[in-house]
Each structure stands twice: as structure tokens, then as C-alpha cells.
Length: 520
Image 1 (tube, rainbow, N blue to C red):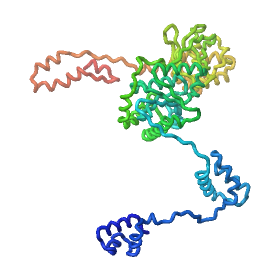
Image 2 (tube, one colour):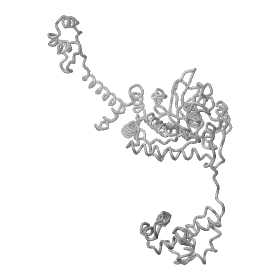
Image 3 (cartoon, helix red, strand yellow):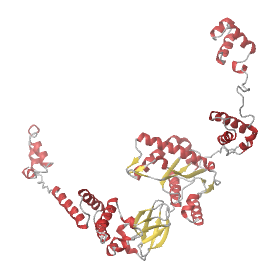
Image 4 (cartoon, helix red, strand yellow):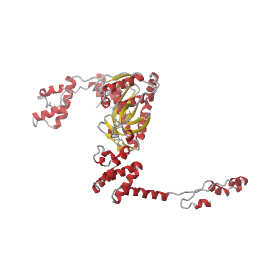
């Protein structure tokens, strides 16, 4: 088959005064074919007839009018109508004809169907707009110390240059939004004229007060002198810049995890450092436009706003407080007192008398509880019968072994199981919890009965073993006169003294023979 390239070569050779025979040979075609294309003055592609006729009979022609009105609904799939035809005409249409039916429907919709939504590309100016949104990271299966980290990233993007940054958070609340919003501008070193978000429905819901959330968000925008812009409900494409940045960022994280060879991190700090490195790598190729943005940014305010919410709560008689529809314990000495709670994006702080007393992880969701046994163990020991039906009893088993110990005590000593377990728990509060947990492990391994005395015996046994490893080493002082002797000798004679001097100045005693040190 003659190609366009051959005919172009033929015409070029003829224009160079080649004979028809020579030109056709060099263009790899016979003279008759060459003469045809020279006479027509057209390329082979221009002489082809368009294929506008059917090669097979249309098997859907006689049923088309029956179903065509269904395709006016954009949500109706061709596959659904095909199944309808199979049910209406048993044995007439087989599954192999589905693709042909789908192509026919696609052509009909392109020629006669309703118009589709048009997305209008927007022109961005440097320093004019910033966008942000939350994105879920659960599909990446990140783990911290082997435990799955169910989290989000607050993603901050400049649409003009695609510069981006973000923070790890655990729910869409105002504290996370404020922290990420302010971090973005302070890392950027300036402020854009507008900031675009979605309707923040999830964040408003988690705040439980739409009016209060709106006031706080407007106050945040006012502090930075930024005009807030929100997209229409259900129109995520209107914030398409940050939506596309979500996809690119998560692909980059996925590739970096594959290259790293592990999705497990030793700590959250290590994981956040890993994400910052990825942001830095992504931004490194956007410096040209980013520098244009920096020249157009507005100045930052003199200070950041607080990233937390202040609450005044009173400690109840059960030594608990209610914060954002969740229950937390505080020390029993605060019962009846009003404390200030500072609610951050992922933790809480308890303040009393201008002093921070405690910091604890913020619970996610509602109607949950976190009771720290050290806060109330003193009074539980005095009231052991209250433990059996305590509402938050499950929180008072620090590890699985503590729960196993309680179950064994309840089986062997049902009358005094609570009292004995609380004594063990009190020991964990006064000593190291990990040491008590290890003592319980040893008792289970030995098959011994669990009791307070047995746990104490294990701890004393370990303490005695530790003492056997401890040795007091005595190192004699350095005799400085050896330096005087060294300086007074000629250089050629000083070498025999160096080993002795070095040993005296930097002795290395043997652990099993401390008397060797005194001898040296």
C-alpha cells in the first residue's frame, strides 16, 4: 500500500528534474501508480473513501424505538437496558452483543442526547488565591509501630504555582482547619487575597454549633485579611485545583512508600517528617511560578491566632469531665473545681490556676471515654466493691495481661478478686507499669497463681538480679610525674615510656578483675 510519505518523496524527486522512471524507483512504487498520483495531485490519505456504511446488520434496529427514550436520562446505563432487552426477548440477545449495544448508545447520546455539564478552565493570577481541603489517607495503610494510622491530611495549595503543604490530622474540625490554614500561610511567608474551601460541612458537624463555627472561621479570615470563597454544595470540581493536588500528592506518597520498602514508621514524628520531605520534593519543580507568587503576597499579621478552643468545665464527683461529647478523667484532687480545657486538633490540655496539669490524646467521634487509672486508683482501693459494676471498668485494664490477671482472680477468688486486682493496679501506678506487666507475664509463663504477693516477689527477684550485675570500679589517679620524665628524655628514648603513660592516663579495667586497676 502506497503511503503519503512515498508520494511526497515522488513529487520532490520530480521537482528535482528526475525522470518518472527514476523518481518512481526511488519512491518504491511502479510507474503506473506514480503517474496516477502525479495526475491527481493528491495524497493517498486524501483519496480514501470515508467508511460510512455498515458491514453487519443492525440487530437492534427493530427494538431501538422501544428503548431510546431511556437514554435521555444521563444516569441510565446501557448495560441496564441491555439486560431489560434480554428479559423482554428471551434467547434473542446474548452477552457478546453488549459491547455493540453500548457503542450504539454512545453514538446516539453524542448525536441526539442531552448536553453535558461544561467545565470552564479558570485563569489564575499569582498571589490571588489559595485553596484547601481535607483528604483521607486510609487507603495508603500507614502504620505506626504496627498499628494502623487512620488519619487525614489538611492540604493547602496555591492554584497558580501548584505549591502545596499540609498537616496530619484525625478529623475535620475547626482546630485542624485553623492549624493547617495558619501553618500554610506562615510557611508560605505571606497571605493571598482569597482563600477557597468547600462548605466545610463535616467540620461544622464536628463542632456541634454552626453559628459558633462560622464566627470563629470568619474571625480567622479577618485576622489574616483574607476573603473567604466557598464552592457550591456537591460541586467538588469548583475546587478542582486542590482535588487534583490530592491525587498527585497521594500518588507521590504511594511511590515513596514503595521505594522505602515499608509502610510502617516508628513514630508519628517520623511519618510527618516523611511527608514534609515529599512536599519539598514536589515543590522543588515549581520554583519559577512560586517566585512570582511570593512577589504578590500580602504581609502576614504580627502573630498567629490560637489553634485551640478554650472551654470551662467543672470536674464531676466521678473525677471526670465532658469535652465535645466525650468523657475524660482527671485527678481526683480536682473534683468540684472548674478547670480550663484547651482543645487542639488531636489532643487536650487541662489547665488550672494558669498552670498546665495534664495533656491527653483527643478522642475521635462522640460518646467515647478515656479513664486513666492513676487518677482514681487511690479511691478505688478504698472502695473495691465499686469496681465490679463501674461504668468505665474496661479502661482500667492497661494491657491485655492485666485483664487476664483479673479474669484469673475472678475465677479463683470470686469474693476478693476486685480488691486483689486493684492492689496490683495500685502497684503499677506507684511503680513502673511495664515492670508489673512483665511480672504478670512471668507468672503466666510459670503457671503460678496471680496475687499481689506473687507480683511483688517477681519484682524483688528482678531487683536482686539487677544488683548482681552492678559493680563499683575504682580507678587510681594519674601520676603526673610521668609527663615530666617524658619531657626530660631525648625523643629517641621516650618511646618505651609511651605505652605505660598511655595506660596510666587512659586505663581500661577488666570488669571481672578490678584489682588490676589498682595494680596499674
